[in-house]
Image (cartoon, rainbow, N blue to C red; front, side):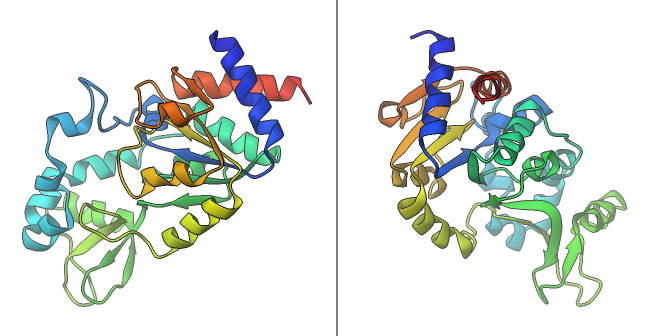
Length: 250
């Protein structure tokens, strides 16, 4: 089947399934200049062991290492801007197709692009909080302290170490995630996975709960055989072409 036929069939599935949800991973943000984690030759985790520098254990036992070795990646992410893929998904929600968007990304680009009903299951970089008294801070406070060589950054209230409001390796999933699992099992007729390798659990288990699924991803995934459609293309191009088909058919 040609690429054009795959996009037309994907559009047909979206039109035929009212309860349509999207799951996105790091691959949708690479066109915004954010490296993904596992792509051969370019993935972040090929260059550094995340457990060694970006886990909750490291943050608690060696916060200086956490901030010196891994924090710059977080601060760079906050400078990124949405790309065509993010904007298309916001448009599809505006058009009434997408009922909700689940993202593994912490970059906040879906919200910046205009998506409204978004579940950021791995957290975000809009804020941080104190590990002691739990006081919340704008993320920029953490960035500024690190720039001024206050490493690790500390709470003005109790002097405990601050942390970004993201789900690190070793952290539990947010409380709402279990409600989300129930929602996908009972309310999702069709899920489109965009830019995810589907290897990070428990999020990677969500497509299994949907009645039908499709995938847009450059690399193969373990779910490809279960998908109605698999599109091997950059997410920005595939989503723009999908939007064109859906707009032309209205």
